[in-house]
Image 1 (cartoon, rainbow, N blue to C red):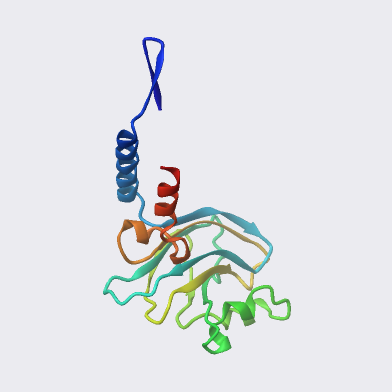
Image 2: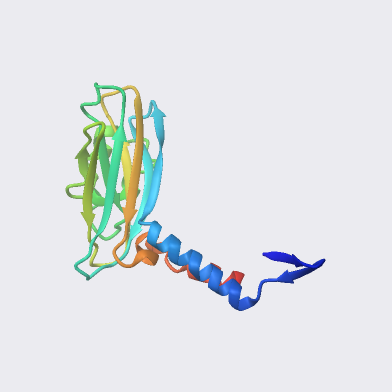
Length: 189
């Protein structure tokens, strides 16, 4: 920011710049509540990856969450599912994302058998849903897939909101991105 005073440019002082950036961060931290993914998916694939989010290790009573809203004009989506997978190498293969992703040998139905426990959610179009996530062992990536193994076309508009536990500087970021905002601020000052 520069302003002209009688033909001269006057630069913003470093203290004013720091105050300005701090004020903007405070405003954004109040307004932002989580990672938001929205879009429209129109595909002939029966199983389609939407997004991933790394939930942090948490021993607090506050849990992370995944919320969704899905709309469709079709009433024939009786078998629309939200499938949740985890990046766990140490668990049985039943829970592993790496077993199903880009595996051409598995059918849609077989891929749905590899979701985490309680991770296969029937979607009722034009409604919202919510699950709580609490990882106590270590941070985990959670992968979200939409699937309809009996339809030739998935046409859905969606909003996914991921939230980690903690304050607004932690809640809105995937665990692997936490701390980057503060690093960028220090770098650009």
